[in-house]
Length: 378
Image (cartoon, rainbow, N blue to C red; front, side, top):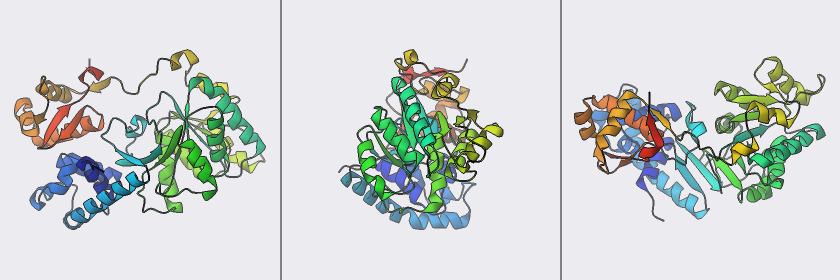
């Protein structure tokens, strides 16, 4: 297997101790690229304000080890027919990229389209009632003509029923899991997970060495919320993963819907609370979700693509102007031709790379991508 070094560096950053997604993004921005996190000398790292001496020492001591670990991980992914995508790749879910806590890398298995026209997450209690299961079926019936992609967490109850109902209606469905892709939890859903991979698949931010751990479920829930246009809570008690997902979706400024139920039913207490607190829209029938989202069958055929035209800042306009037909331009050329200082160039290039406008190349050079897909700010 030919391993692309960019993937090695990307995975390596996530394997550094004490470096979470937010700090990793800061580190990449200050270093100028993922590769530079591993190649800059100590003196350059010491100039980065977010790095304290102890953390610099930790990074330097880990760099060789984590790169070897990253290569091993990529080999194992290949052996199990799984893949990974970095945050600066166009294939990375654009909805999730908008979230401040989005991970640097996602691992996936199956036929996963991260950027379909419409995505809805459906979550709920593990102790689903006939009322909740029936609503899931009605929901998929309404979504079928629109080709909505369904995301959930592969858990017992509403999650599993949503995945199955989506498959029955021919809808793509993806499961975000709280462990590596080397296993399936719960194991009883191994057959369901396999079926999903023909029209969807499994998604994780964890390596194949990560076993299922309860503490990781909230991290999994933010993927479910962040990858979706809307989250539907079918049934939930006042506490639990579904409520966490709903509040995360609300914090990401995504639409949240909840199915109301009897006031004396624990399985509806969380949904009723979300509606009462105005976190969620009340759902009386599946069509109300489609109406609120302003979706229609006719607009589905247009295949709206996320962020087809990206807005460029004045600084980014100057940077793109430097390319002027050239295949690639060095960072030094950008600094000289724009007149901006190195820190500004590094920060803007990182933002542009995350947005899929430029791609880093060997020799500290950058390539401009898809020029026609972007428009300048008025």
